[in-house]
Length: 99
Image 1 (cartoon, rainbow, N blue to C red):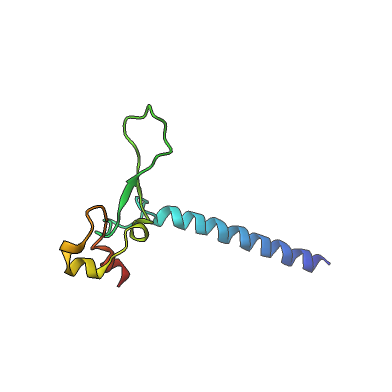
Image 2 (tube, rainbow, N blue to C red):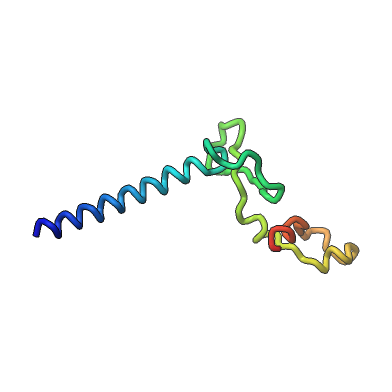
């Protein structure tokens, strides 16, 4: 009985330490973290975060992970620029991200 409780405590401790280490590692290696990437990629896109109130003078810039989903690369529009619609937004850099 004591051995079984010991094993359960060990498993719980291992789970706790693993979760804590994952959180610490994320904070250290994230963008603008202590050991994060020194410079961003030219494919990174940012947008204004809209969760802040109207009295704030500067909005916070956050990474826009959905940019290449909202503005996919369409190769036929690149070859024939006259046929592209005026209101369509196409990202040429998304072709680099997809390959």
